[in-house]
Image (cartoon, rainbow, N blue to C red):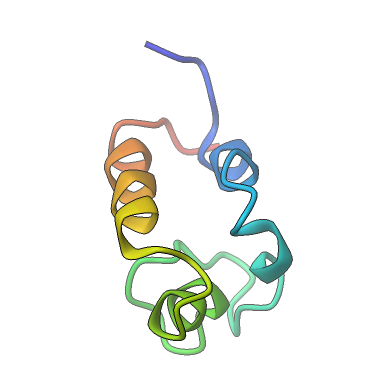
Length: 65
């Protein structure tokens, strides 16, 4: 078990870094929010879907903070 906040988890995925802070909502969870830059990057092929799925699995087990 890792002691890693969800905010820090975002930065553990280098392909996500250019998109962080570009979402329509400041507290975006990058899951289903409209205007999510990360989801758009997945849709456009900039983030591989399998990497995104790994991110979601890790996020589900990471404490918020």
